[in-house]
Image 1 (cartoon, each protein chain N blue to C red):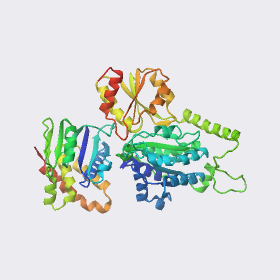
Image 2 (image 1 turned 60 degrees about the vertical axis):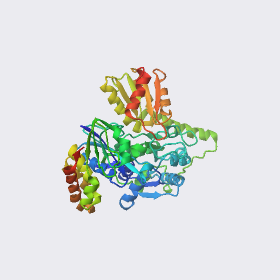
Image 3 (image 1 turned 180 degrees about the vertical axis):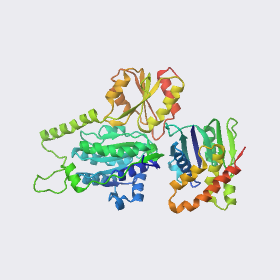
Amino acid sequence: MTEEIIIAGFGGQGVLSMGKILAYSGIMQNQEVSWMPSYGPEMRGGTANVTVILSDERISSPIVSDFDTAIILNQQSMDKFEGSVKKGGVLIYDPNGITRHPTRKDITIYAVEATDEANKMGNTKIFNMIVLGGYLKIKPVVAIDNVIKGLEKSLPKRHHNLIPENKSGILKGMEIVKQK
Amino acid sequence: MGDLKLMKGNEAVAEAAIRAGVDGYFGYPITPQSEVLEHLMANKPYETTGMVVLQAESEVAAINMVYGGASCGRMVMTSSSSPGISLKQEGISYLAGSELPALIVNVVRGGPGLGDIQPSQGDYFQATKGGGHGDYRMYVLAPSSVQEMYDFVKIAFDKAFKYRNPSMILSDGAIGQMMEKVEISEQTPRRTPEEIEKQCPWATVGKPTNRQRNIITSLYLDPYVQEKHVLKIKAKYERMQKEDVLYEKIKCDDAEYILVAYGSSARIAQKTVDIARKQGIKLGLFRPITLFPFPSKELFEVSKHLKGALAVELSTGQMVEDVKLAVECKIPVYHFGRYGGVIHTPVEIFNEFKSKFLGGI
């Protein structure tokens, strides 16, 4: 199994940390992982993206130009990455703020209303975990238990009290993701 | 097995330095290597191992602090990215001239000049052919994974002390910024002053009554004395070539063609090899790990049964010169580069390979 994912959105949406949690979860189940961020000037107040690769084999290139899955969280990223999903691949997006919806017919498109749901749950910070949940429902590349273990390992102890909230965000995302 | 952590390449260098028992780090921030200093400051090794971590007032100051620490036989290092490494060149030449061990880490970005902050391999010539003035070389390691960023810190220091010569880890923005899992080693204690005095009898650690004073200098005004000094240094580089070359061969045994690539380019080229193999094309990858000493003899051996080689690097053609020298014009060698911070894609490399060797895409 090799899963090549791009997560793209605004800086501050938790794009990079979502990727990090995914990568840590991969380590928890003995996968090879790589996490390659955009770190250019666009990150400073604009769009941010990260390429995460999870694999059972040694990962060759951490930089890829087409992806099994694209998780897209703003319009600029939609314009940039819709075309980069492999034929037969998956595109997951939050329709909030999207004016031009994806149109490709050769990939499967899912929506996860994470912004709305996070507002409803009264905690905008778990937005990215709702998105992650939506992704894991479609592509169960890592088990939710390993995501929790990954959080335990990557978060400092003083933040461990936030893990149950993150878990409920993931579960909510799994519930609300739907095919377009 | 040691503890597994998800780390950036830059953080891995910093963590490895702490765990290797390094005595001092002197640096100045610059993207894309700032996480080296940041990780050290966050982890405060000065409170645990006693390692000095200091943000100097400039790159020039940092490399001269390294000179001072190295003169005392200490394990000391600095890191920077391309423009900052240029500023350090005078100091690196003095380290080599004075036969001092040290580690310099270069997380290369696009250039020339101020350039940009994206990955590049444009500093190959600077790292392997001198860089500063005078007749010297560094022992240059090119990691292609975050684990190697970690592991090479220890190797670089081992060779620096073995040869009393500066070592360099030549990385780039991609390897520095990406995260992969890293196996963390046990803590090696820093050496005691007694151990340093024993292992580095040349170091300026205070003169006991039973020996002459030690002098650290690169100044020999008598040309015949200077020539002797240069010959001594030259002999070290020849010994490196015999004893400490590192390289990796991937699917070279039955290959008809190979890609030659190092660092991040080697990772991308590896995927090109996978693409080619799926189509039944016998393509391999030769990855120099030490860029100086370059694995010339080893590459020559591999090239004997080849039809051609493509050097893939993020520069306008630097390592390709060493590849051509190594194969002694026995097979055609071409170069494929991307420049200024743009990175090859695996498919792009494959198309270039086909157009050069298989008569078109």
